[in-house]
Amino acid sequence: MTGTQETIVIVGTGFSGLGMAIRLKQAGIENFILLEQAAEVGGTWRANHYPGAACDVPSPVYSFSFEPNPAWTRVFAPQAEILAYLKHCADKYQIRPHIHFHSRVESASFDETSGLWTVHIDGQKPRVCRFLIMASGGLSRPAYPDIAGWKDFKGPLFHTAEWRHDVPLRGQRVAVIGTGASAIQVVPELAKEVAELKVFQRTPAWILPKEDGPLPRRGQARNWLLRKFLYWQFEMRAIALLRPKLMRYGQRMAEDYLQEEVKDPQLREKLRPKYIMGCKRVLLSNDFYKTLQEPQTQLVIEGIERITARGIQTRDGVEHEVDAVVCATGFQVAEATAPFHITGRQGQVLSELWKDGAQAYLGSTVHGFPNFFFIVGPNSGLGHNSIVFIIESQVQYILGALRQTLKQGWKSVEVRKEIQDTFNETVQKNFKHTVWTREHCRSWYQTPSGKNTTIWPGFSFTFRLRTLLFNAAAYHCLDPDAEKEMAQPQFNALHSR
Image (cartoon, rainbow, N blue to C red; front, side, top):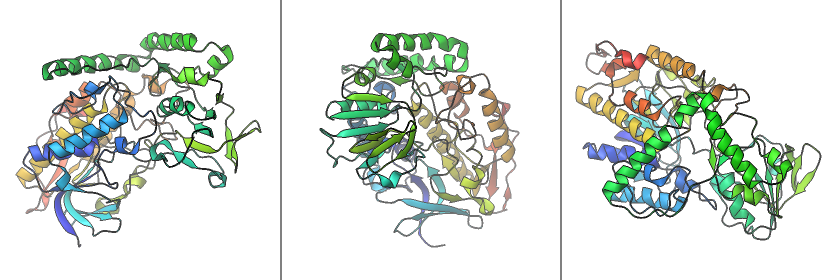
């Protein structure tokens, strides 16, 4: 085994990676590095710089609790402000000296004899570490739709997460594939400059008005109060997600908004979802419906057959000629793949273990992969509140695991299989009566087989309670001297429910 050795390697420098790094420094742990494939920090908010990119969670709750940002200018912060905030955090907490940019991880493998991980990096010497923390996030790998003919198109074709600012779109004929979260932001911006805009919709989304506007500067005390108010306001929305009968009130609001904004009954019917609200992420926009009614814009719902040299052919045989194609088709989130090739104990490959759906314990640890942690891993996503709350919960949990392992001198910690299995059985059982299992509900939260491996089926504060303390009784903790598992007290029943 050759390579430079570190105590901790963190992969990614978005909210997850930076949050983990900052908490490590605050705990007095300095022997760590962050590996970042790009040239700057920011994760999702560095990659997604398409026109109109902004957050759909109010900015006061979309920041670290320990670093409130009084400089937000709007209720829903635009991409540039969020990226600037993350750069500020990296600078203020002196994280940059720990970051290795242009370091794309190709694979990682665990050595049982040494109890160390070897991380292979494209074009660089491998890094060896005791602990490996995945902070690459769920929105890091763009998903292109499975459509024939991608290589046939003669014009520029790109994803919103790989925006081509070098491609002039003014006065052009442009196609946008998708009507999800990124599409409803980019479509109104494109419509302002293109000659013709065709929006290809597979499934309509539930949309509510975006209560956006200027955000006046406040003192720290008022910021704290606003953050608390907004958190609990959004948290209450989980009640309708968990009790679908209550969703009819929100659905009625969305239907009234559609009725008010779209006067053409035929277009309105095309935009009316046939599934329960909350099954997919509820979208916020004040101008998407208006844009679809502008003369240069056309909504196409016939379904795409293939990409051609000149444009897009739909299933009704019509070829829509365009000069450029933009894919607003989201990310690989629920797909049963790891972010790169990861080999754990006894040669177990993570992507093979996950072929029927990703699973972990508390979205953080995986049996068979000692000293290995996820931030925003399987079933830790939210459909109703700020993901930063979940990130901070997992960071605290992982920090507890690291501190206890270092203090006790354990060689490794690995979640017990029975604990992980029981936890995931409970998670899937908790989906049974939620909006995510209602009729016609298919979303990017689910694997192709329909298993929801993305969402936490509960309140975010219950996730916080589950991750407040690292309970070693849920783990195999190996003594490096005796080479045997340390005896642990009986596992707390709270964590097995």
